[in-house]
Image 1: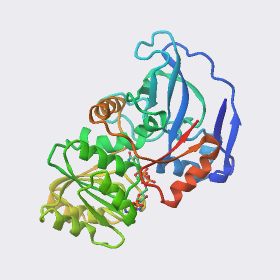
Image 2: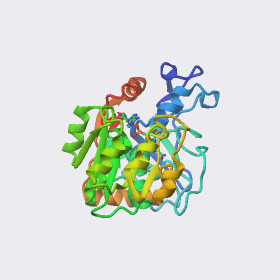
Image 3: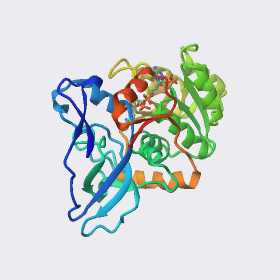
Length: 335
Ligand SMILES: NC(=O)c1ccc[n+]([C@@H]2O[C@H](COP(=O)([O-])OP(=O)(O)OC[C@H]3O[C@@H](n4cnc5c(N)ncnc54)[C@H](OP(=O)(O)O)[C@@H]3O)[C@@H](O)[C@H]2O)c1
């Protein structure tokens, strides 16, 4: 079977196409899945690009969607022919977070889904939404579930709430779609006027160009009549958090998700305290949250926004497209 591995040198040019043995029939509790699609995340990009020797030979990509080909003894949840999508934390089934690292994450601590066939425990997957293509389903594992958890599972989003999204990458566009589908008001930011137009077409109620308006936190406050937003989906990190703290309402919720501007920095802690802001770090979500999300997607009819799809052979090219920042929403590979 075809697969892609991270080569000795690391980096996008070090990605190697390999032919691996077929994993065979599923054992008890396992399913055999023919993977048809994956989607790119900033996290996958970091793993592939890092050059860290621990990733040598690793099959990258945390997201995987495809069709069950066979089920092992004792598996009742799935049957051959079912469309499924992988879980980011395959051992975190339900309840509070059980993990504080990436040791069990496919495409990081263990092999991921840049390959055609896997045999894995049935609980490493959930069913995919009905009507979804495999590429659409593959966008749920990381980006989609993160946005759902930030706003719904942990954020308690309700109709009438206001949501601020930063930039127009995978997580932010899912957050925009989820918020609109659930009756919230959305303020979307981007560095690109053309992307802001696309965000409006998806339902964004107000848009701000964060390059043209460096004090976008104040601009958000003004637009909300001085109140601030209920939820911020914070994908930027230290470079954007101070503005997000300005933008959020007293007692509002900031989901600290991303590292686009770096991994550490100064935080205006006094402003957070005075505003009684709830700042929550979070990493993706549990299998149960993914199951809830799948039902939510079916009920709302949300369709993931796929900017472009590449073949598995063109994985490096797909990452270069992500690196360029030209994309809006998700980038996929289909095979
Ligand atoms: N904690 C978690 O569970 C989790 C899960 C998924 C992702 N993440 C993290 O969340 C971040 C976004 O991930 P992604 O997969 O959505 O990335 P992505 O699809 O590559 O999105 C990148 C987009 O972010 C925007 N951006 C870049 N710098 C920005 C800035 N200074 N301010 C505002 N927006 C900025 C740009 O949008 P414009 O072109 O519109 O300006 C860019 O196109 C990454 O740091 C990733 O590691 C975390």
